[in-house]
Amino acid sequence: MKWALRILVLLAVVVGGSALAWHWAGPGRQQWVKDQVKILLNRKPQRVGGAVPAAAVPLVEGLGVSTGDEPPFSVASGPWSMVQYTEGDKAIRPDLHYTFEPTPGADSSRLSSAWAHGGTHAFRMAPGDEYSPAIRRRAADVAIKLSAVDVGFWMWTPAPATLLTAVVTIDRKGKQIAWYGKDLPADTAARTGVRLNASFLMGDLAVEPDDILSVYLWKKGGGEAFIDDMDLFFHSAEVPGRKLGKPLALDSLEAGGPVPLTYAKPTVSDIPVDTACFRAGLPALPTTREAVPFGRSSHAWRFVPEEGLVWLQDTGGKPLGLIRPWSPGSRKDITHFDRVVAKTTPDGIVVTGFDVDRTHGGERIAASPRPISLSITWPSE
Image 1: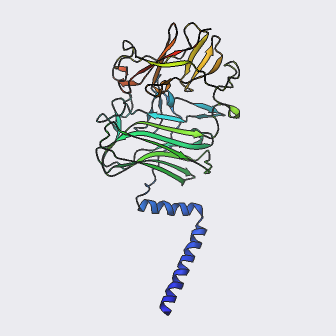
Image 2 (image 1 turned 90 degrees about the vertical axis):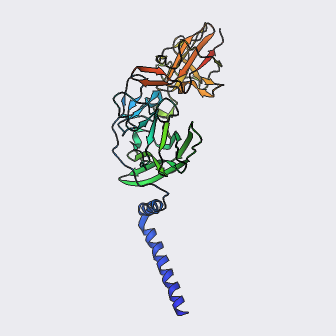
Image 3 (image 1 turned 120 degrees about the vertical axis):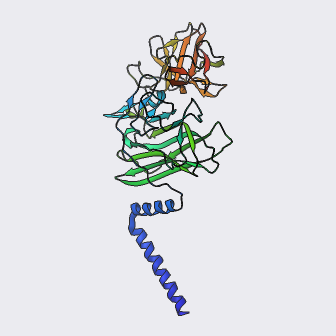
């Protein structure tokens, strides 16, 4: 009986001492212990680091930006990746989109044509690759008071035991203060791929401007995996690009003064694509940036790729509201394509959206996703 009491007392002392030690360790040390336990249980990867690149360099029209990250994340494609806001003396790039198509002059050693969701190539993680390279950014370079990070991509693997995890970490002064992850299990039967969409909310973390964000993929199971059409969005708690948190360009003096905070309501309908101009394999036309009149009316369409917005404006260029060119049939916003081409018709405009394949022969209209066309009309005065 005495031995049992002694053992109980000893256990109480150990537990009490451990509780005090845990309390005295502080949040930083406590997080480190939690991380090590997760790693031992295979619930969390080891830290993946790397240099934080300098500012992205725009490529030629439509190609996107050279990010400074390690391949295959060295080139981000399309108009969304080129969006940049100026906040004080800082340039903020909140959006990145990766098609993983070969780009002239870029390292394509991690790309493969064995499977692709869109285009001809995808990022291949070989059987022995546990981690992808990391996309690393200072918080101040991607957001104003970071509130969330969205990660999305398509994945396919022939190995049924493979599990792919999208990971976002935050480091402060060399110490990891947060780790987020979402899993995407293998579905070998889904040859078109499986989509992962993850929104990691920062909550009350209070991310500081000099905190380092890392985004990467963690693969478990030993098989190869293919990743394509990857999106990465950094969300701000404030609206970037304008003071006082006003929506983008709605307070622009050069645009003619304040604009109603409403969407215009033109008539939008799907129409067959003009295959004489927009057939897969044909040379890709540039995006229409100038104003395009709606038939005989005094209103015009104007798409601004850097803003990702379509404006309804008058003949003097004054914005009257916003237009969302939503395709009822394909359930897509036509501005999400690599290129958006608009032309006037007697009754309105026709807008065609398509993605671009880049080959040694130049830029060609992609077969997948297929181009779509919309007829958009505005009532004549």
